[in-house]
Amino acid sequence: MYAVVGCTECSSLWVIEVGADSATCPRCGTRHRTDRLRHFAETTEADDAREARAALVANRRGAGDDAPSFGDLEASIEEDVVDDEERLEAAGIDPDAVAEAGERADETDRDTRSQREIVLDAFEVHDEPAADTVRAYAAENGVSREYVDRALQKLERSGEIVETPTGYRRI
Picture (spheres, rainbow, N blue to C red):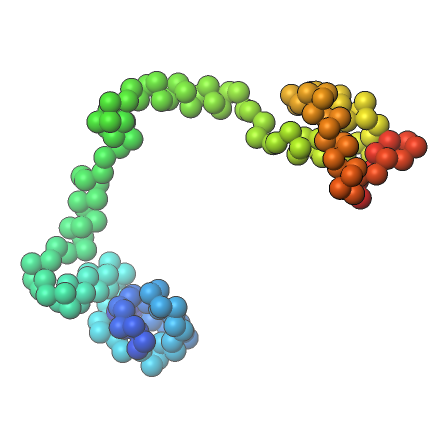
């Protein structure tokens, strides 16, 4: 059993399943005890309750009987949809070229980490890595030796890492 109920705070109408102890208004978030909410319509089917709600909202807005039914609106969704390919063609873009570019992007699987993050990740992969170990890890991930050396100096000055006899340790 379904009911169309109204919020006492904001006057919003929504559909609930009868039997629940409480319901929350989707517009203002006010929680209500369902036995205290006014039931504007009760139906056995959810679609019928949505139809009733749509009719009540249309009447509030002055559309009355001219408003399309919930079922008509739902059926028209399929007809009115513009798919991605049509949208791209309308904008003068070749949809096949877009698809190929997407495939190439998936294949490259580029690293989105910053150079700094790559240097710091070396400390996650290796316990107390030496400078050469950090440089090798960073080089495998496309970071230059010069950047690594500058980054290690900055990280040490800022107190994020400390150099020990066995290598660097993250603090």
